[in-house]
Length: 441
Figure 1 (cartoon, rainbow, N blue to C red):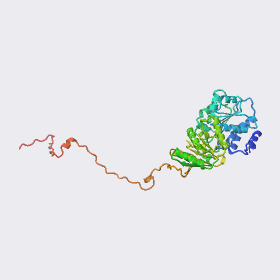
Figure 2: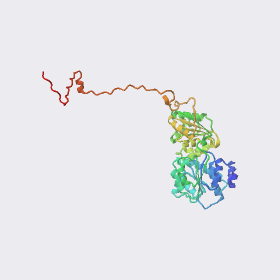
Figure 3: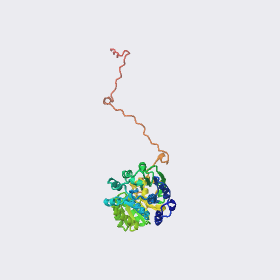
Figure 4: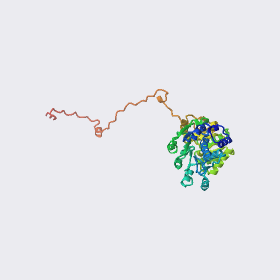
């Protein structure tokens, strides 16, 4: 029970209003250590409740220890605007019975309006690294009084190329602070590189790996000859599979924009989400999906992390993810919080090896599936015919070697002229080296 964690009564009231009854595993593991002021490095599966795990300690400090003249006390960095808006909304709900103010600071909003809001001195800021860095450079924001720093989805921020921005922001923060880093996997190639500059003697909490994140997700592959056949298979799946909401992932914005209208023309309720859309457009699409006015989202990887949308029970990879980690984050949009989900990958010939590497990373083999009537001719890479001892099929055939030919000797012209002519016997030589004289007859 949350009461056992000694939370402030106003926070308990907010938690009850949200319908949370008892802490999740990650909250039970994180909250006691966070209340002690420890720096933490946490890995937990998608949908496990880690947002509350880092918000409650910040709110608890703000409620218990009022500091009306201080600057921003808590900073939460997220990889995307969508996740920042989502975390900010959750924080506002938890702080609804307190006087703590929360402000999202992301790109896509008018800079001057944003600066005016920052001047009102919110206790907690949730933002993206690029826009926060811009405010620091323009001296419109400072973190001299910062008490808490949180990196949410740290591995995703590094994957998106925000390493320099993240380190710029963290270096600008007050050194005497409590820091927490949350990542889908602590073995991510880039996370270890920034730990020494962000955390001090951190406690490690690892509740999941890439393999455990997808335990409740059934994974299938459907082979296709090309993108044209993939599109037919995608339309069939969206019309015939049972689902409440579905997300279709592509690797490019252009393809998302092409697929959306073509699927809409077939009567499907589809929206498109990618980084080229401005913030109001992105917010509108997500609200349409959450409200059920559309039930299919065509998206690039901007939606692969952090979006918590209820009822997503089908994920289709039109384009295969470029790495095992990215695949986990995509399919993790379904099967959240212990529920079952279905993830389907449409595989073209040039994606077979990538599929195999993802299977090795996850230590599992995806279920192969076909759709009657729209099967492709591609059935996987052709197996090379093995023979002899290497194949284990019989004795090694002995090669029949031709007898070695005598080397050809080049004939000299003068030798050819002498062919057929009788050779004279050589004149005997005497012992003293001179030819003996012929006797006269």
